[in-house]
Amino acid sequence: MKTRITEMLGIEHPIVQGGMQWVGLAEMASAVSNAGGLGIVTGLTQPTPEDLLKEIKRCREMTDKPFAVNLTILPTIKPVPYEEYAQAIIDSGVKIVETAGRNPQPFLPAFKEAGIKVIHKCTSIRHSLKAESIGCDAVSVDGFECAGHPGEDDVTNLILLPIAARRLKIPFIASGGFGDGHGLAAALAMGADGINMGTRFMVTKEAPIHNNVKQRMVDASELDTALIYRSLNNTARVFKNSIANQVQEIESKPGETRFEDIQSLVQGVKGRELLEDGDLDKGIWSAGMIVGLIDDIPSCEELIARIVNDAEEIIKNRLKNIVSA
Ligand code: NAD
Image (cartoon, rainbow, N blue to C red; front, top):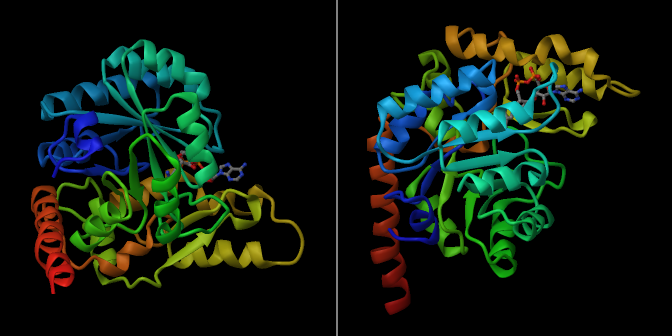
């Protein structure tokens, strides 16, 4: 498949890995890139900018294909030296960055100067148009189905993607709710140049997380995600475990919820431990509605090949037969 995204990023298949906190290690990113997609090393998963430089170096030893780095700018418990992370990305020589969470304008001149392509992840059309106007090279349009932070508009990709196709000039990637060939064919039909998958890549052999988490997502249905932090204007879609239920209960109490009321339950470090040791109620972990469509744990190579083959089959046969009947 050849799209504006495969051309721009120099990848074989129009499939990009989500920049997942705690999951986007070199093992994950290199496996996706080696399979012909675009792997992403997650910046803030590394405790310091120096560690990020080391992780990028490690990834480069594991693949000679292109990969990107994600830089997410959202509220955090501890302040993050974003400028220093951005500088580490530039110093590493990586040529593709995925920004998310906030307007990336302050970082663009330095990224551009270094010849870096910037994909900005957006949960709305207005943010996508803004990203285009400030010079981003592409956007990832993130629908309400997605894992992590879907924004506050609650618009699904069936609406977002066709509007993006009408209004954007730059290439865009469909993100949120994708994990199989039907999704890829549908995204391309709606005008996208590729898909972004986070949750689906968590449930692969190479994902550096405990097998209990993978198996729980295989067993899950589309009803097994929960929205938390709604009351804090920082909504996140996470797997519906006992901690997510407790957070929702606290948020539903009358009166204002303060972040301090839920901080001990949601802190990222507990989520990291959960993913490492497989204790499924230790904290929270991001998961999208696509869990309902995941029923195996393939390698990244098997997964990407299957998605591309299924999408091609749908386009060449099912859809062609419908219009030629
Ligand atoms: P953390 O431990 O600092 O915080 C845990 C969670 O609480 C995060 O979701 C954070 O956004 C939220 N949070 C922190 N302070 C808050 C406040 N004052 N008000 C409202 N919400 C608050 O975060 P972490 O797990 O170390 O993650 C680091 C960064 O990566 C955060 O910005 C987080 O949002 C982001 N992240 C993004 C995704 C995604 O979907 N792209 C998924 C997981 C984490």
